[in-house]
Length: 426
Ligand code: ATP
Picture (cartoon, rainbow, N blue to C red):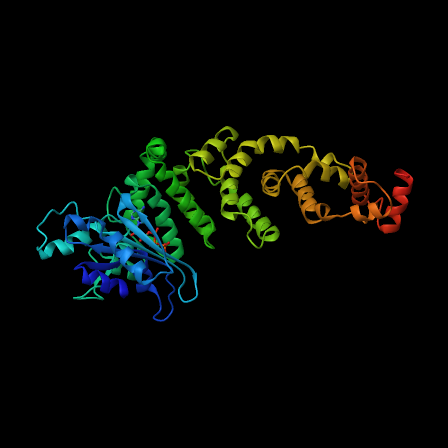
């Protein structure tokens, strides 16, 4: 409300827009936690007002010193962030200036006020995301719904505002799927038709053509994939994307096919071995999806999507690692397995396990659950106490002892001492 008062003092209109309005209208009365608030300021066309959003954010920050201010000059937007605030928790408020350039009317014209916010909402993706609530007087609290968003919320459907929406911005296909699955809505049949049309008209080529000119498109695509793959509903969303043939936006030959089994397996392994989520699960799931591609294309697609360097490298090298480990079942002893596998990091082994036949997967599972945890009964301090001199031989002794422990030759401390006396007499 402070923000609304500050806007009123400057003679501006302020609106709550986008997802927060949608979620507010959908939520049961007393149960809504909004952490991401989008506000739009309507500055009535005076030249100085193009930066109204930024000015308002600065005003607001003067009254909330604990918030961090970020200004994005090019888009005339500003953000105020609260991180782990004792009262607000984590909150992100974006303040943008309504785009009014298409309506060069005199400032006093009352239609202008409505038309500039209308224009701003008209640029948005779906009707349910294109509503606003006025926060400033007069008529504060009024819902602005120019495109039938409220009805679509009631009908529980995702509907685009424009025929060409998906051709203009293919990431909206992923957004449509994400909102549909998350909210339990249907994609309206006409909108689905537009999606299919956009895909049939060669969306991948378009995305590719934009790679150099607008890396932002790939960044947004990656962001949408991230949102989807880290959400609890990711399986349904991937299924829907596949049903719509939309995985083609990532690469033309990308098909879900038998990838399902591998995605589920990866999910189970990640839940089992990394319950705290110290790895980026979404990224590994994406890697499993990209494993469906020809090995020569995987790295390139990952690069285009601007995945992390380790992720790109894993996809580039997966084939070699898989080939190098193809004879893993020939290992006779656990110590041989450990010597072969410990040079690889866990995400690499996880991908190899997912991509490989069951015989190899079982060995990697065993390595991860058991053999990689094995420790020799004596450590460096014990060796020192026994009178061995730290140095190269020290390392060799510890290594030999570990391998003997892995193979069951050494079981406890006494056996380890006997082993040392026999193989490394002083
Ligand atoms: P969420 O709850 O997932 O954050 P959101 O609706 O707030 O959902 P954002 O990605 O934060 O989604 O976007 C904020 C608003 O910006 C959307 O509600 C929509 O109005 C608009 N928007 C975002 N991305 C696009 C896009 N690609 N095309 C058109 N409008 C978009």
